Length: 412
Image 1 (tube, rainbow, N blue to C red):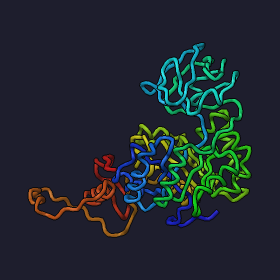
Image 2: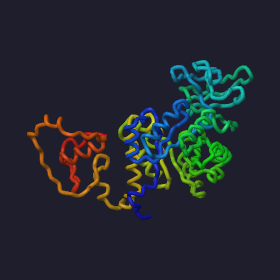
Image 3: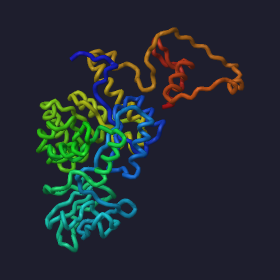
Image 4: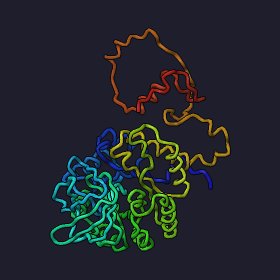
């Protein structure tokens, strides 16, 4: 495999917009850092806010925008204080979504008596709690807690049998109208279970749209070939998929889905836990770097940032980290036999060599009071960091060496 030109980045980066990143300056920094598509997740977005969110993104970036549907999944409704802890053997009543949940009642996004049957086993929020239905009629649905745990608001529920649900929620359908109005042409189809779901989605739009079908259930895997044929791309959601596939088998499921998609030349995106530690930390773990690198070596076409960019503390840094890893895999893997490659300086705080002559002069007696009368220019943190490095001698554009103690000070 030959080295590709650095400017022809093949692997795309999709980043989810959320409370942490919905800000003009942050979106612009993420844009400059290498984002190709900004994703709006309808599972965590109020339909009343969608038009303003999309309109703002249109002003802040020229990159493509994707609406990710809620999809046909059973979820919990609103829980008092956002979550409750249920103990094993406790009897819980399941109620409609308009009832607020507590220790005795759990609201569902579907009418419980229309969907649940005695004997059904419900795994709530990645098996945090497991409940079996012991009674279901027109008046009441009861379940016994088999395994206690935390149950939160708006959490996904997996049931141990196939249940026919509408392909889209009412909120999804309303979002399609807004997408048409604002010219959004990329839709991520959550919980795609068959080719019919993709065909049905396209019928809501008069013009051509790009459909990214999310494979996050056993049904999706079972109908993968037909889904690939009808979709523009496949997104492997390792998170929701692990509700139904044992977590120790997720990597094998990822490889199976990717192999099948490759047979139909359908582009593949991978999501979930790429840089999960960066939700709270400014640096990723070595295991995350290895996971992303291995995923890239397998030949995927795109990576998706979710919690990292939506609710994490470091959305811009997460974007830059993903872009750096992609750059290494696409442009530098041919140097793996060169030991000097591993000894090179990190690229996160170093600008690229650009020629010129290194001059290191410091004006110790400079009158800083005169600065107030000079013209000013507003720049972002990255440009400020580069300027300081050049001006104060922390970086040589010729030889790339450190000389100033403040090299670990971050501006971006």
